[in-house]
Length: 310
Image 1: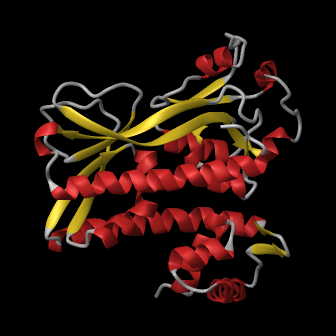
Image 2: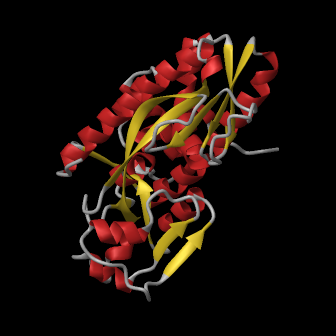
Image 3: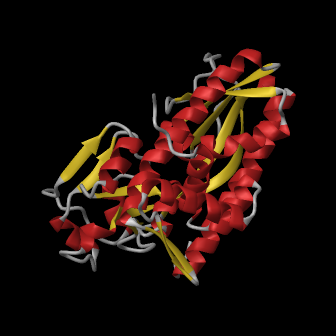
């Protein structure tokens, strides 16, 4: 028999840890601030350890809280995806969505329940891909891609969010040798991945210097793997900041160069022109614009609070 903690308390903890705020977690789960606080206290009592450090003006995760948050988030993401796939069997209609893997896991799944509240008669079916769009491909209705150009003939598209890409690393990585200028990176391992939209060579160029040919790098297949390696202190990676803002806010990750060499890139939704009048696709496109705008506003508020200029 599985010995599980109180699941409502786990859900409250994950929301509070993700936002680093009981108030924002309460807004998301539509309960009171006190309810979140009580659920977290219940979970801490169940474990016998503190998960948060509470101060009058600041909430931070303890080391135990960091570890548990990382595991719980992955479990809840998998549960959400499994539940969504099962629910498809009884849906009135299906909207097939193709999106990049890390984007799907760390942004889309966490928000798509609000689209389902908007259109409860439509079941989103998620698949992950970064493949270039092919007009002959009928395996999806809507595709999401990071893109800077106009769509090819036969496609329609809608810009819904702008991402900022910059160097990111674990705060512990800088304890021995601080980074003051790009040339200092020769003392560190650079994390790269096959799907990266912004290679290190371009970052060095945009920062006003050249990448050392002897620079040590470690290469991964997917962004998700590269991000995990960065969280495990294996090196410094280039990542879209909206995908790691939770870790930046709770102090696990940091921007060693601030906004130096920052690059902006669009996220767009794509669909075949002949299908653009379908109501679920129209509603999903409008929802993406609203959700993307909300994320951009949140990122701008965070940047302003930390002195960054986006």
